[in-house]
Image (cartoon, each protein chain N blue to C red):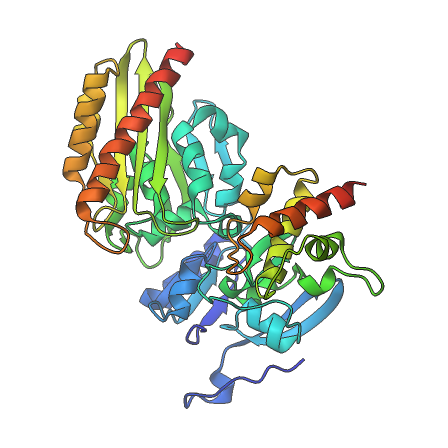
Length: 291
Length: 172
């Protein structure tokens, strides 16, 4: 298999890349890690006339925390960089749990978090994680920069709100106001398969009480699902067994799984409930240790 | 170096997008003219005649086409040849010297790490990337590092043993 013909440019600056996109119009695609785009092009699901490879643009491979704790992940930061990150291991439990579960180790060497968000696959893991953390995407285009909440970034399966001449240059995770805990769990038939179901939970506690919570679901609907009612049920209270059970039930209710070769809808909904419970029960233990 | 492409359309030759790239493969410097849509796996196999790199699934699953680009393991069926401009590639052919097998190759021989051998080049290159960064891996480390490479014969037990054998030999 090989892609249909396309013009290829590998600019050395963001400005050049945006100019190329502006002239390429609707038929241009940005290539970062390429671990979803190249397979799509080989299968001819995507046939761009112009591919703008941003791998030669310097200064996009970072992930770093601002002095206030805001985390920034550049467009060329690979999954493997995040998997090995001491910063994530110490400050971002949900992200640190997700990084080693993305695809397989070789794909993680190339693929990027920002690219995964742009690809907007309902079974993409990072979208749930970033949504649960209340994160956003920074886009740059000819009219400057804008920040888009992750929850507003994706409009449907494989669709996002980027204009044809915009590039997603960074993902941003806001600083925690309390002690952060949470996790990401994914059921997959084998390493590298798409999620049968995945659950991202991010919780912040201050003293006994949860002051912020986010829950998002992977692979159980037409796009990533934000379980807002489930998250809201946690806020303002300690993480008791009763509250955890309630949140897990609410999360399972908003899941919209379909029966397929990975399992029945009922099974997937059950997995969502179990994963929410499991992560929150552990989060409770983490918060106690940290307190 | 010449790559001959199948011609399935009426596009004029002058309209076919082609790029000239420079790269190093197994220590040798090369210049190639490639169609922009050529995959790295095809540059290696058809362009350079290095058929040790296998294309198995062609869908980023199996890892048989794994090579190292600037020291990092990548699936060469999922990278464009134009993207290796200015970069260094290592394939399974670069492991052995003229007179000696690489410890990984010896390990696969000693521990019976292959049966049909199709996945072996990818397994060895993924293992090479692991041992380059972690010379003393645990069994778990090896299993983790090879989890993107599929084998349909061995059941993996002997592949893991082979890599551990090589790690020990490289350390001594």
